[in-house]
Length: 93
Image (cartoon, rainbow, N blue to C red; front, side, top):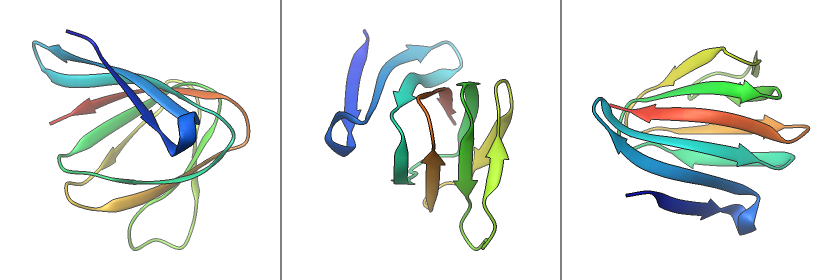
């Protein structure tokens, strides 16, 4: 089954599915700044565009470009900024 997710007034949308390795989503973000919370460990890979990420406890934004992956711990909040339409793949563990 494919789940459709929509956040931030439709500025972030994703399609979710269950895989043999666990849950995954493939999504897009319109330009903006967003805060997400995690309930599992998440691995996010940028598919296109550039994603600026502010990790919990950090004061410096880090840039991630296509095919780069970052990890976010369970039960935290992190911030994301995108200046142009950006695509991503997120896997949950």
